[in-house]
Image (cartoon, rainbow, N blue to C red; front, side, top):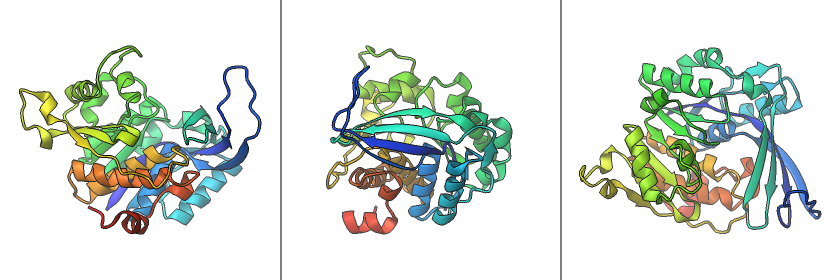
Length: 315
């Protein structure tokens, strides 16, 4: 199975703190570590560990962080031959993690801001050869839309992980086959304010009205809500088309930082293998649960064998 990924790479600089500081407050007693990150890279590595043949398009700087990225992709078996070396610095993300595993992240995009339509066009052959294209949104919107458009032109299925969430151009919705927002990202995509008052099911219904494809609303420890054409049992009652995907319970929750990327990658792998969207989402939940139980991101991304050993036979 072949997966193409268009997204970000960045170095993650993580401080684990007893409690996240309020504005103007300094908190001591933390521990520091650094490592590779960025949603696109995380998703590419995660998919490769689950057995996919993965090609990645992103942009890095001509610096130590960028060179470390290329070494990571080489070691993980990710094809990074089309990755752009930009004039700016490699993206850096500053991450605060509390003892509960909850995290707060600030990002300096650097070279990622240079990733545009021209770079995505050089990736056309990889998109065309893929069973599914995965796109995330830490990159410029014109690159997001260009990747989705090329996939549609080449007949490749598309999966948009809309993180960090921002409004999509109207013409982008028709290019999306599957979209996977969480509870906070979905209202942003729909142009709703923080006091929108919509239930999670109403958010899923509203997203389904925007695209002729599948919606998976991820809900952390509460699992996910799914709606797609396969679940349209009653076109007169959209609420009946929504399926609850139960959560996979982790052994423990240590760090939630990479859980969304692990979920997205596993979802793409399962779809590329021909699983239904519901079965793919259940498999993705297993991957996410594994990831939150281990500190860091890259060390926490599971292999197929780890998921099988921990959770029994995969679906």
